[in-house]
Length: 291
Length: 322
Image (tube, rainbow over all chains, first blue to last red; front, side):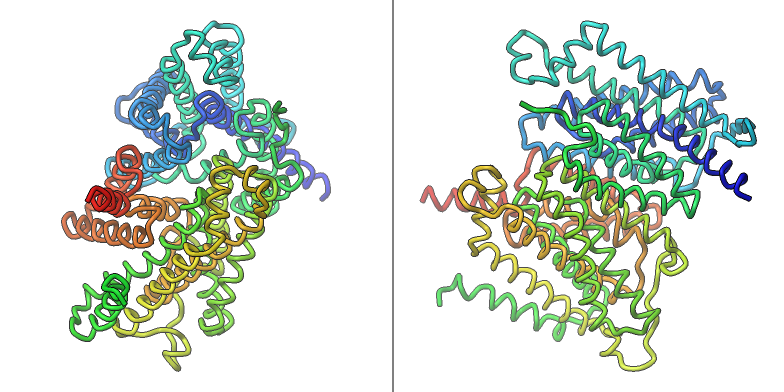
């Protein structure tokens, strides 16, 4: 009896790690935008939802293979991210930060209801059923494994981009001091645009991975949007490493909580944990030291 | 008393007399909805005007509606007792979330995200406890077999109109009470510079907690009333992020810094939704939110003070020139 229980526990833990990969990817995108532009995209999860619809239509209607549709979707969502910046954030850059945040809340409404109007409220799925791996008596879905691997690769690529390229270095510099960089002759508008597109691309990658595991419907963003925000706050907004660690902590709690009860209770447990952590470490798990 | 001082009383008398003269059920229904939502929006603006932007008010509203209905259906507790219990529950929730936020200086983006998560979580809890709350299918308080008064269930619209009007007036009274108090200056100081306010002797945590409690209590009352009036609630209509954003939208469109701003916002949003619903019929699903969302973005970019706020500012400027 005990053995069976342990195997389930282990399986839930491994699944938690796999879920953490995608959550970490989402948190990275949000943190990137926040760290560089000092804006929170409330509608981030809705960009992922649009990306999931993009995948659905590319694969189901245009008959593209999955691996051809994925780059197109990433490009599409990256373009959406850039568009969001140009149309909504750029005119508000000098407005109070709360206004920028609320404007993206309006975009959340627009994207959600656009999806309702254009695609209907039916649940849709890709129709690709990936096999379930059996490994040492554990059932692991291949889709999750793929998502985890792709999320890790995506994060490593972003890391390399940020540390090894000139543009990446400039982006990191801007997140340290916004005013000085403009005085140094850096075109901040161009860098903001690149960052927004990069954040969009990360959302696009996440949507390619999530569409393998979940059905897409106009309100799908609400099921992982709030949790992404919690992760970013717990990790410390703009703190990449903190967000990464927090994503896995949260995924484990959700996965293990879901083992003992419904998945929703996993979320509730994660929230209780979050409140407790706010008392203990209010500035985030790995608080960024400020001078 | 000057003409200006008399104006609210005249307007109040006209509003009270209205249902006895004009009895179109559909229009009264719209007016009741406008009054209840105006009250909810006013309670949001109490915090919002001091820079405490909360997206957790959907959560408070959901607690108000569901606790009242659950107590009535499962324990037979009259809403007269159930509503205060629900309001206390919302207040406790507000303290649990807001106290650490204020104590540890979680402001701006952080505060918005934490409260955003709060409304998401209340939605999840309602959905997760579907054995009791009916989950996402919604929930209906049982029709009373005994006294209508005890169950707070009335069939005629006039009674509801008067109740909603009284609560709406109460909301405005609280708004003006806060507006004329020392707390207002304290909170305005806090919203501009917390450290400076604290140095000047303002108890930052306590002041913020106080306004949050008032706001949460009022919002949960609005939720309970909505539930008693509509006799149907679902997680999407009284809780969650979209309800919170709907509050923000209405207040920003109407005007955040004037007392009647949220009311103007409620009139505009509810009439807009009705016009779209009548114009498009069942095809309207989604269109109203699409228009809302676009208007919200456009308003924040071009008219951040809202319709009433900008109008009053213009009138004042003109009076100043004369």
